[in-house]
Length: 268
Length: 305
Image 1 (cartoon, helix red, strand yellow):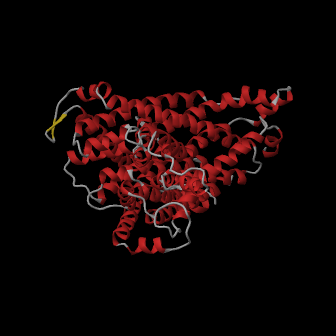
Image 2 (cartoon, each protein chain N blue to C red):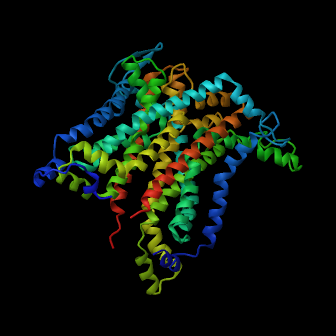
Image 3 (tube, each protein chain N blue to C red):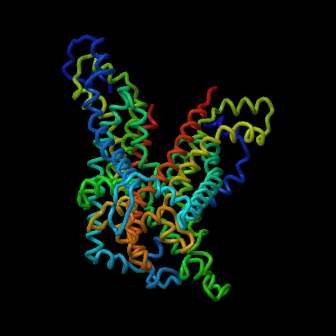
C-alpha cells in the first residue's frame, strides 16, 4: 500500500517538500527563540545574547506569587481531569451503545466549546454563575474547564470503542456477564490508553487555558493569568522562563498522549 | 484477550434477552443520565442565560431585564462595534486563507511523500506539537521576535542595516494575522491531511495507468477531493481566530481591536453585561452557521469507490 502510494505520487513533490521544510521552520522558530531568550543574561528580552544563565528560573521559582499560580494551574488541571474524564467516559460508552432521541443535538452541544472561541464559553458560564449567585473561585474555573474539555475524552474513547467493535461486549453479555463485569473486563482494557491520553490532554489544556479561566476565576490566579497581566505591561525574561516551563509541560504531556493514542491504533 | 476468558463466572442466560438489553434498556440512563444532565446545565443553560442577558440593558452599572433586540441592532449599526466586526471578519478570513495555503503543501508531502506509517505519525506529531503548546506563550513568542527590542529589530540594528527599530512589525493587523496564522496553521494542515488520506490509492493508480499526467492527477483527483478538508480547516480557523482576544491584546495596535476584546471591555470598564452577552451570542451565531456549512460538506465529501 505504502509503496504503491510512493510509486504513483499525484504530483511532483519537490516544491511541496521545500515549502514543508520552510513551514516547519516557521512553526518551530518562535518557540526556539522564546526558550533561548529565557537563558539570556540580558535584562531586556532580545538581543544581544550576552551570556547563558539560569538566573531567570531561579527568580521564577523564588517568587511566591509564581509558585502559588503554578500550584493553582495544577489544581485546575487535576480538577478538570477529575470532572471531564469520568463524564466523557460515561458519555462515550452511552453514545457507542445506544441510540436515543436528540443524540445528534447532544453531540453538537458537547462539541460547542471546542469549536467556539473560549471567550464565548467563558462569558456564557460567567453569566450563569452571576445569575445563580455562585461566587467565582478556582471551583468555577474547574467547572468551566472540565465542561468544555469533556469532548476530548468523548472523542478519544468513542473513537477507540468504534474501532474495537461491539462483538466482544455482546459476547460477554450473551455469556451472562453483568454490566459491571463487562465494563471492568471487556471495555476498560480496550480504552485504558485512550483514557490516559485524554487525561493528559485535558490536564494540559485546562492548566494552560486563559480565555475561560479569565472570566471564571475569582481572586486566585493561574500561571496563565499571572503571565497575562505581566505581559500587558512589559516583557521580562522571567516570562520567558515561565513560558519555557509551560511549553515543556504542554509538549511533554501531549507527545506522551499522542504516542499512547497511536500505539494502540496501529494494532489490528 | 478473548471476552470469554476475561469474564469469570459464565452463566447461562437467554441470548436474545441479553442482546435486547444491550441495545434498548433503562441501563442507557445509567450511562447517559449524568453527562446529558451536565451538558444541559453547564453548556445549554449558560447559552440560554446569555440570551436572556443579551435582550436586556445596562444602565448605571446595573442590569435591567427586558426583551429587546436593541443590543444586536447597536452591534451592526453603531460604531465602533460595526467596524470592529468587519475588522474581526477580515482578520479571521485572512488567517484562514493563509493557514490553508501554507498548510496544503505540508499535508501533501505528509500524505504522499512518506512511505511508512511510522514516519507519517512522526511528521503528524511534529505538525501538532506547536498547536498543543501553550497558546499564550506562542503569542508572546512573536512579540519577542517582532518587538522594538525583538529578534528582528535588534539583529538588523546590530548588522548596521537600520538605525532605528522598524515600527511596522508590531502592534498592527500584520502582527495579529501573522500570530494567528502561526497558531492555527497546524489545525488547518491536519484537517487537509485527514481528507488527503481518504483518497484511495487505486484511484490515483487507475488515472496514472490511463495516462494522466501528474498535474492532471492533482487537479482532477487530489485537489477536488481535498477541498472539503480545506474548507473544514478554513472554517474552524476562521471561527477561532475571529473570536480570539489574546493575539490582538498582545500584538495588536489600537486600530486592530477585535470583537472579543470588546467583550472584555464591556465586562470590565464599561460594565455593560447586556452588550457583552449580545456580542457573545453573535459569535455563537456566526460559528453555528459555519458549523452547519461544515456538516453539509462532511456529508458530501464521503468518497465512494
